[in-house]
Length: 348
Ligand code: M6R
View 1 (cartoon, helix red, strand yellow):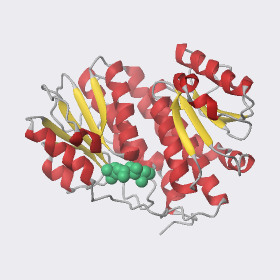
View 2 (cartoon, helix red, strand yellow; view 1 turned 90 degrees about the vertical axis):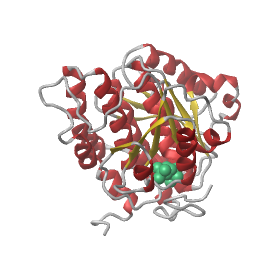
View 3 (cartoon, helix red, strand yellow; view 1 turned 180 degrees about the horizontal axis):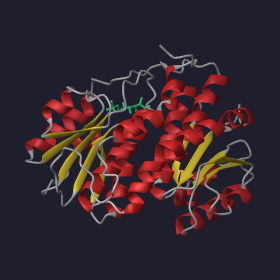
View 4 (cartoon, protein in one colour; view 1 turned 30 degrees about the horizontal axis):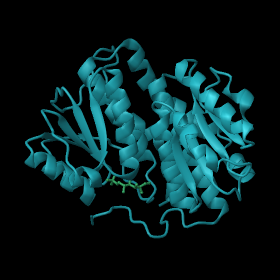
């Protein structure tokens, strides 16, 4: 059942501290230094194939691998099969919650025909993807009923972060960041003002999401969730791309959500983009940990606890999940079963 929640989606959003703990269980040594995943890979390069939300998680994986100095690319599975890149010794990683998505399975089969070693990152034990790939990394999120993927996204990103650390070794700081993540998600859930923000912008013409680095795929994911369950127009952009076209869409009636955490170069640049949209009269909502002055340029703030930049993306995403949920709830949408969509897409 829904355990007292109005929708499975809201229940699953609230399950994230627990599902993230499950993903970590017995995989990270408390003393630091080792991450043990039961998969035996040592890739020189990685190609991800995935669809929808899982593609956004894979896209986060690309940044995480790059930071570790390992080349990685993410492909939409449907496009991968259409125009397959050379595999050239790369590990091909299929990211799929259900393990049954036809486009992802087809891309993996294409990679296998080209001689690639394959790894499945999935939630479902015994799924087709886990049977067909050479190895499987389980995300252990528990069953997800809502068509909108929520807890599986955060667990996919965490599993990919673990995969990177299994290659590089984990510092004490890495282990601390992982250990703090479930509690930090709980804090977001307990203190979120997302409902108030959904109310404030109810009836807008469109909803835009911007970010850089890991916050770019988080912006794409924030927009996908929003459009999927509210049926409102929502788009995610790389913050730096705004001035190359999308800025023309920005008006007083298009709130812009900007994820800005940390105090580095990335935050400074995104704040520059926030000022650009603010100057065009758009309402601005920043998702921030307060380590920068983004809030000064914002009409509303969604706070996240201060954390490692890698986990900050997961925290920011939880806030955007809640905004999408409450916006859809205000419109009385069929949140757990949005029109035209299915939980598992088994046709190409
Ligand atoms: O089961 P999969 O992870 O392969 O599913 C991929 C997409 O169909 C899925 O993530 C879809 O985008 C979600 N409904 C988004 O919330």
